[in-house]
Image 1 (cartoon, rainbow over the protein chains, first blue to last red):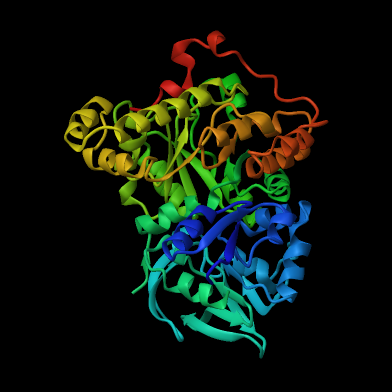
Image 2: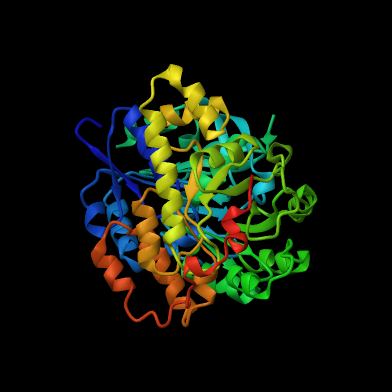
Length: 188
Length: 294
């Protein structure tokens, strides 16, 4: 990862928290809001936020096409929560705008509305234990053969990887634990 | 093993709303327009603040059926307002499954001394503030998100600007004090000492801080963002304007690209009539909503 720059998509949501976590890991970070800025980074985080808001802005300002192209060239992308929804090929009961890159079916607000939001201990494959903060969180219902499921909570898929693409239904950027950010940096 | 309603989870939703626009809506149709325009949440109301101001009388929590219909119509978070100190209205809203409660000066206060003890609830609260002391008192009571009060229903941004500048001023002041002076600063601010210390260390409010109260144009939204707000509430400014759809979209774009005058110029074009607006000096002090809250 030396000399590589990680972009954090800064259209809406908790992008500052990801920036801070990446800096603590010693990474170079920049916010990206425009298509040409996507070309200048070596990895991308799509943060938590409102997936409909981020999806519309991505589409209106032409970032979606560039992200899809860069993903096809192998750029690592990690989506948290809203980012996981935007990465998914299938979103249950929704035709909202998306990138459709990961072979996974995601249910929005799968764990319920805000009063059902929760924290819980998780065991992540090849990383170890971590604290999961789930906020109106989605979950993965099913995933294709090429998708490696890294964590489940109550049987539901909450973390998965497909080659250069990583998704988490929870928010490592809202905790002090940097293990998932470090893992993503090893992919870059 | 799973913990619900922790402060982390309550403040966390506000973190997810950052950089976004929360729009006041009174019908499912308006809620859909807001969602379609890219709102990150909606505030379900019976009347927008401009109409509350015009109608007069006692303004209360909305009818639950209005709120439920709006909750059913969109997938984004739905907020609703309770009166200051009216913890039973808050209990009702929590039982409806609302995502955030705004204990709001837009409604007529139910208690002239005390606010709701927001720690008692699983649902998070947002509260208005005009200065750091007020913001930290609300956080001390359990608010997981703060917004400027501004002067609601006026379409006039001047009060919101005054309030964010005051909060910023107060934070700059305490951030430059040696630790032994912070207790006296807490006394002057009328704020909890531990929160004063934390704010001085962070050099910002310990929770997310949105702008509210008088935002009517994309440039207003970008102004509040450049002054350091984390996101925008638009009350009457959208559905009291000539072309709500277009204006809503423009304010969403302006909140994301708040530092990019070229984008701001582009989205500000041909928006139709903004809401008319009210000069603050024409509102008698006892009719100013921002004076409500203790």
